[in-house]
Each structure stands twice: as structure tokens, then as C-alpha cells.
Image (cartoon, rainbow, N blue to C red; front, side, top):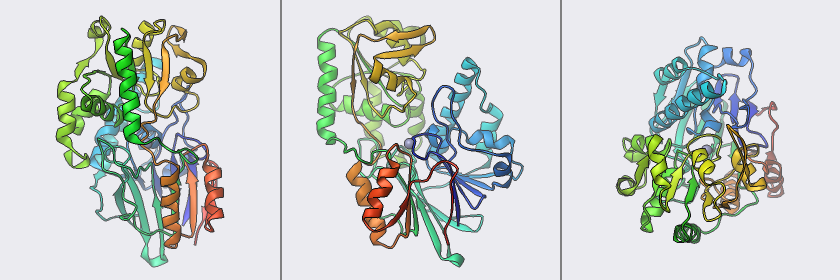
Length: 421
Ligand SMILES: [Zn+2]
């Protein structure tokens, strides 16, 4: 098996792994200014036969439509139906934002072609791609997220690509189950939180909710930037469980409406519906009203690279009673990272100093340090021969740790190729 890492190595963003020059596992974009793409050549695009998409996040799916206009093979795409529905929303948003900023990655026709060529799969249903048997397993990361298992009986070789994975359940999703994941000779594992343990979820929720409440009590606004997919829905459910009714603004509303059509990919569809029934949706001119009295606003984008969150920051940046409560990892080069490190964000009208308080809460949808170690140890005990660590700034340290446990491991660089027999 020939494995070529095209992106997402030693970094979070633009994940892409090429198998035998024929099958791509993910093809993402790194949200920076300008956006960064995986390594690419016309050669790769021409020989490509299929793309298997682990999940809809743009760092895994963001460049897939661009493949449609440089491949004439009738490229086949495989993913869960909810991944496709979420990705459609995100791809269209990419086109819209691109038009506003003069960046053209692909067009609506390309998105249409992806949807036309897509094969939709539930978890645990076998399918064949270019000589490999494949199966998707729940990865517990966002709705529809999957770990991908590929195997070829004739060559007695198998691979598991975790995509992004979480082994702890949340309000929105069932967790991935390591017991259900099949053996694989080769494991490609994400490393986002290697070296960092997540706080106990219940404690984290308590601290977050207390901080939101305290902000309202002192007459401020709690601005909660969230990724549209998964995080917005999770946070609205957390607030609902603690009796707080938020305003919801941005793409997270469309994602919620779409998720209602895929209840089988959620832990408790009726709990999600109940939380959103009470939340107040806002957009456009209604935004002004939201700020007329102390309020909580759950809004996109999660890393502050565009979206209505910038409207709220423009209005509230000078207000020390207000607070920005970040709810996830902030990739280097994003506005969110800048806010954390410099208390400053970039807006269309230039940089903005933020006097409102800034806090970060680790509502991560990724496995923490001990979950990652347990997962890999389990694979190695069952005979995995080689582990590749990617998708994280500590991928090299993770590979070192795996080697210390007695299993071969590599943290590849973008562009590196391995042949495993
Ligand atoms: Zn992800």
C-alpha cells in the first residue's frame, strides 16, 4: 500500500491522505488568510478514482469540490448522508465568503457535481473502492463523522484512518467506541490534543454557565463564538440544560435545521429540538435589538474568521462588562488565536482592540491525551504494525511516545510517502 500525506501533517488543517494514487481520504483546507490547500498536482487529480470523506469540517472536506473540474474519471465520493448535507452548507458559505474577499476556490456547479457523484453510507456498511473493501465507523466527533477502515484480502493488508475522533459522549453525540473499531495493520491517528487533557465535562459546563450568568448579571453581553457544526448545537443544549435561553445567530441555525432530518446520527434528537425551540434566532437587522439588554449570543464563526461574531465584536469590543467565551481550539493564523494572544481581531475596517474580557473553554470534540494513548495502545496490542500521527502540532511527540511503547510510528511531513507491504 502506498500512502502519501498531502496535508494536515504537524498542523491542524488541509488534511489529505492519498492511497495508491487512487483514493483520497479527505481533502481539506486550512483556514488562514489566504486559505492554504493540500499539496496538489494535475497528475494526482487525473489518477484519482475516489474520495472518502471522514467528516464535513472544512479542514477535511473544504477543497473537495475543487477536484471536480480537473478530474474526468467520474470521481466517486463516499460519505455519510449527514456529512454531505453539512458540507454542502459549508461549501456554499465558502463560495459566498470567497466572493466577498476575491478568493475563488470552486463554484456552485462543482458542489452540485460532488452531490451528484456522492454515495451515501450509514456506519458499518461495507462498500468497495478500487480493489479495497471499506467500512465507516462512528467517530463521535461531529454528526456523521467517521473513521475509515480499508482492507485488501488478497494482499492481507488493512488500514484505519481515525479522521477526528472522540471517545467521550457529549450532549449531542454518542462517542466512538474503541471496542467496535476493527483491527488494522496500519493506523493513521489524529494528534490534536496529544499532551493535553480535557477538563471533566461536567465541571467545564458548570464554569462556562457560571461565567455566562455572571456576565449577564453585571449588565454585559456574553458572546459565544461557536463552529456552526456540532459546537453551536452542543452549546445551545448546555445552556438549555441550565435554564439559559440564548440568541443564536449565523450558520449554526441552518445546520440545526438540517440535523433534524438525520436523527439517527444524533444521541437524542428530541433534546436538541427542545433546546432550539426556546432559543431565539437572529439575523440581519434584528441584531441591534439583541444588544438592547444583557444577553447571550451563540454565533459563528468559531475562530472569528468572518461571520456575525464580528458584528458583535465591533459593537462590544470597548465594553469591559461584556465577555467573549471561546468554545474551542483556535488554529494558528486565525482571528481567534489573535484575540487570545493579543486581545485584538482583524475586521474589514482594520484591527480592533478588544477591552471585553476573553475566556476560553475546552468544549473539544477531539480525544484528549489519555483517550488518544488508550486508543493507540489498544491497536498496538492487537497487532498494528505501524502508526502514523497527523492533524496536530504535537504529532512528532505523539509518534515518539508510541515508539516508546514498542510500536513503529512516524509523524510524516506534508508530501512524504510510505510504501507498506
Ligand atoms: Zn473535525
